[in-house]
Image 1 (cartoon, rainbow, N blue to C red):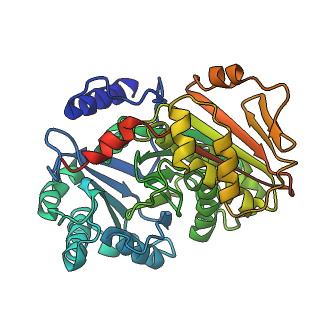
Image 2 (image 1 turned 90 degrees about the horizontal axis):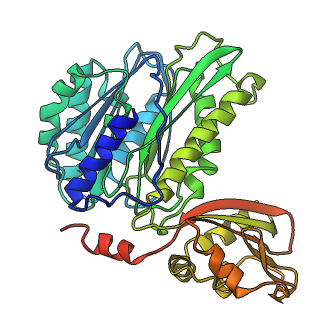
Length: 433
């Protein structure tokens, strides 16, 4: 798989016209994703926007599968998101012997496209359902790209039969590559674990680079497993792991109109059906799923548009966990904080500012700030042992951590973000050109 991923990265860089334009924070190697029994995938080129690259992904999940989803809470969410919300509500059981289908295009988000957007979504669902022998309401479409432009869905319809004919168990890199927009590398992660001693596989991929802020999903993500898990339990597991992964990252504070994360469980693993989220048999599975979700979320931050720093922010001592999260996001989304990191400036005063603007309680005289292991501030002022040169040297690292204890209670939260560079402005200023 590493060769396939590297080929995708080179292809994307060449399309962007800058052969070295892969994020400096990109993984240096990729694991080989295991096939998930009951899942087949394919990717192809429909020419939605891009020339010379795959821009449509199709996945088939065998009959009897459970599916769970989380979606953007944006008031201007796209037609595909609205369709998926309705489809998920109808897929409360294991279906009627028909497969589930996921169809994703890049290059156009089909958002804020009015009646035409609804018609395009319905046309795609009908075409995919016909090609794969299922009900349109068991089709989960998604679109990502430019907002406010009519989706040329007929181009996608024209390639669906070909995609259906080429479905296979190993097309994970191709599927991940087909859904990218401003991403500079495909994002994949997987794990193997056990339920009741039975081997279980988890494999998934995601896309995201800009317009990333937590609000249920924050991008497109698709995770598959052969575990046998009831739909309500699967939804509970997704909500739980999403809160600590995709909903704990931010690149620029902007929530997309298209955010979707789907988790499908085929039930092909030979263990008794899990019907209770508190079942101790799934302790290892829960941890493995959380690891895959967090890995994918971190890859999005590492591919943040123009990013040069991967930053972890830990808040402790807050009034409660909710307050800690608000404070963490205030720091992570501050343009002043993010530009300081980009310039490798240990300007801890901007951390103080962000804590203060969050609106949550903080005790000035008990608050501490650390950059990595370096104590920067305590007792209402700069720490006596802190040296600016130490802070400046630390800021040169590509991976950074900021820890703040606000001195109020026991609330804690961790979020991940990146810096804000000149490249971010360039990428988004030229996004539609």
